[in-house]
Every structure is written in structure tokens, then in C-alpha cells.
Length: 239
Image (tube, one colour):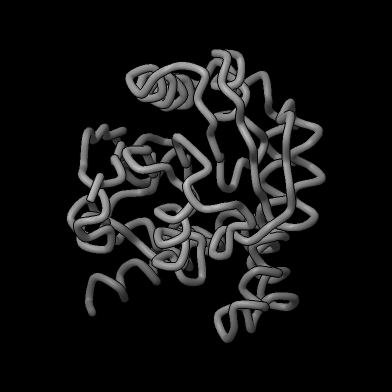
């Protein structure tokens, strides 16, 4: 309790010394103050926040392109995909600005992407070739239709992440792969757009025996990423 109270005090001090962030919080509470009361309201908040994030990334594309942390995480995805194979049929859930989809497509793989309504329109402008509006918790794809499902910085935002994990298992071919990237630990809840936090152990428990863990990569917290990040490569069990 003392730790939570300390974080609140630090948060208040930060807002008082950063007027632009204070304005953001006030706007959030005016228009999305009820976001935690229902999935519908939560999704509306996520759509708004995602659009703001994509536009911010577009405005700072040159800076992000030389960001060491961003380059490292993209390379991890490329390396993981290479270990799986070539000419893969891939679903990128929550593709955002296409930062993961684009280099993987250039490797010769087919990548279908799904994003929230309205956010999908922005994603189409960011070199993502195939984007459809949809719900990560109710994927509109046939069972056993993909070799790989990617969820980069997605599960922590979802209303019910278990539903997504069930859907990922359904649409993957037997022996197919799932890559999940998410902040590691409870500190991930410091982001107001995050509803859940995860650890490797927690994800393994949620995935049960349906997946086996093949690889874990970690990215340390930096100035631009306030929490450590885990990237898990998991394989759908044969039986």
C-alpha cells in the first residue's frame, strides 16, 4: 500500500511539473472517465489513445528510426520469424503503424493485420499491405489458418486477454507459433492505457499446456521505455 501511495505522490509531482501531461490527463478524464466500467467504453478509449500514439510516431519517425531500443526489438522479431521458416502466413494483431509488419513482409512472408476500427484506417497509411478492422478477442479468421500470430504490445491493453489467447490458439495451425511482446511485471500498469500486467510465469499459466515456450528475450527499461519488456516465442502444442 505504501508503494502504491508513493507512486501516486510521484505521479502528482510529475503532472504539476509537466503541464502538457496534465492537460492530457484532464482530457482523458473528461471524455473517458468511465473507461474501466465496460468493454465498450474501454475500447473507445483504446481507439483514441492508439490514434494519438500512431500520429505521435508518424511525427517523430526520423527519431524512432535511429532509436536503439526500437531497432533491437524489431531485430528480435525478425530473428524469431527466421527461426520459424519462410513464406509464412502471419497474422499481426494490433499492427499499429506497421513497424513489425513491414520488415517481416519484406522477408517474403504474407502478413494480414487486424486493428481497432478507425485505427485500421491510420495503419493503412503506414506501409501495412493488408489491414482489417476487428476485435483481437474475436478474430474473424478460420481455424488453423496461420503459421504465426504476432501480438506486439497488445495483451496488456485488452479487456479480456484470455479471450485473445484462446483465439490465437484457434487460428494457428498445429505446430504454429505465437509471439507476444509486453511490459514485464506490475510496473506495466503505470501506463494509463494498460489494463493488465504480465510475467513469463503468468503467461505460461494462462497458455496452459496448449503452447510450449521456445524462447524468451528481455529488453531493459530505458528513458523511452519505463518498464522492462519481454518477448516470448511460443509454439502451439501438437496434441
